[in-house]
Length: 264
Image (cartoon, rainbow, N blue to C red):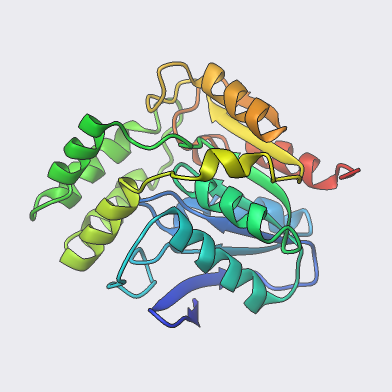
């Protein structure tokens, strides 16, 4: 694990090294960089240099930051890409994180040449969802509640280490500062994102699980995101919110194929 020291804290990341094309992966809110534990070796074997980074306040990143959200995460991503100085990069992002990846791509097209958006929540939580999340993420039982939900998001092919990963997240949220980080990231606004989508001019792959309970109609949600970003959609029919965890080889095949396509 390495750390990128920023003015307000430090971002943790792992770097596979090598001189292959750079792929930077950022996880969803309430998860950690190990989210990509099955996808990383597949992409490295295909010749990529893969970097996985924690969000601020999550995992190995420092715990207490003055603010969290879409623009802050985009700023951290840009800082990491500048630090790596090996791009332009493909950015892979899940759940909340695609909002930050798109924001960064609109600001710094010189740093990002492709996007992979997995189970993307481009819309903010509704008022009642925000209230429910804020209530759940307060107090000593937040981690256990989150871990319980997390286990349900792998409906078709739960990985062998699912309980281990859920326990890791529960322990992370035992820290009040990290609980606040998760809460504020989960409930972050999306103000200004829609206007920026038209500025993003890079090949984009939208990946959805066809059984993702986060969306009323995952196929339609994915089609909408693909239309708004000018991207292409791939749906893993039986997968939940983490298709790259449940079906890593299938997702790796789709992603590596996307990486080798001409960008013209």
